[in-house]
Image: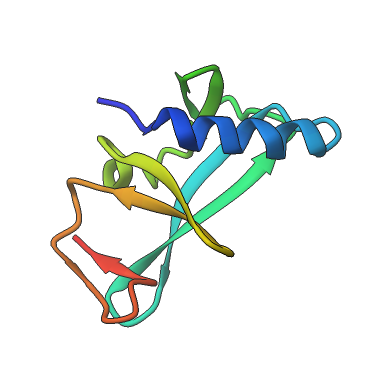
Amino acid sequence: MAVTLTETAADRVKTFLAAKENAVALRVGVKANGCSGYAYIVELVGKIGEDDAVYESHGVKIVVDGSSLPLLDGTEIHYTREGLNETFAYRNPNVRHQCGCGESFGV
């Protein structure tokens, strides 16, 4: 499987990558956090690690560290904008439950 972006999300990430000097990829990961167990970590990176899994989706490189990959494998990241609100949403098939605020998830 892989971690992918919808076309809309990829377009938004390309804007962020172009605005940040030396950024080459979007890093997606997880950390232990919140009331449900894990939270998503997303950042732009200028270097891809040797142990990173690398995917490409709609022209954007996505990197995932080895410890996060089992929790993210199969995830699709979507971008939505409604009025002044904009957000990335994660369609993660590994999630079994989420906290009430949507900030953390459990597998």
